[in-house]
Image (cartoon, rainbow, N blue to C red; front, top):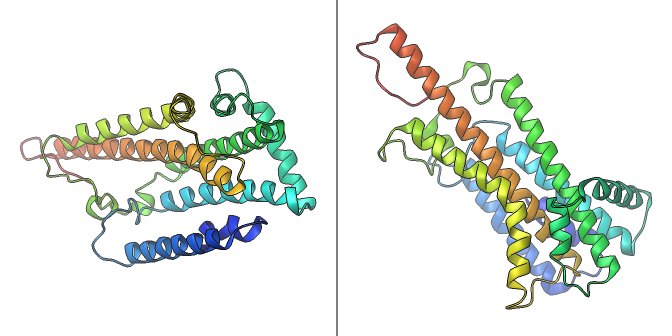
Length: 267
């Protein structure tokens, strides 16, 4: 987590002293929180911590987004073969992803009318590259779900209390219906957010000045949040839907074995 947070500040030239101090503080908080979550017997916020590789895959997607955009930003002040490669790949991917009504096109249209050409290129490249990485992460998660029968890999039981600390199975209502409802909400939000965020920023720009994406750090973290948050929500929705299917299947097996004593349960 420390490397993830401080990576842009370490690699992008021109980072101010105040920015470095803020980044160091955020990195320390993120590291302590992650360490406390994964070493505590009583979970609080982090979901699926004992259902690998869900969180590992999300971290890999986030790291790839930040690293690739950081390399492109580094190439402006300290060009090298590596930075030129990332810039070329990003530009080609942006050409593919930038079509009418696509999320990448909406991000570009979010910019003010007087935005310089270099800023449009930066935003377009960062959006196309990060959005494609998020799509690859989603495909990888679906493959893991199908091939390795996640989360019951190796026949291990799924502990709802440890892996879903924010979900209370005893809060009322059928567990399967609640999981399916949460799954659908996450899937809908994950699909709509890449379209809604640029539109919301464009509408809000008439009231106040939007965040300037001319700053490399602002561009990296803003585009990362725009691409990663929807992908994370879709992955969570898929995971919750998978759990609902597992619980339904367990109920059917229990009913077939003993129809009179079968009771709804959680995995």
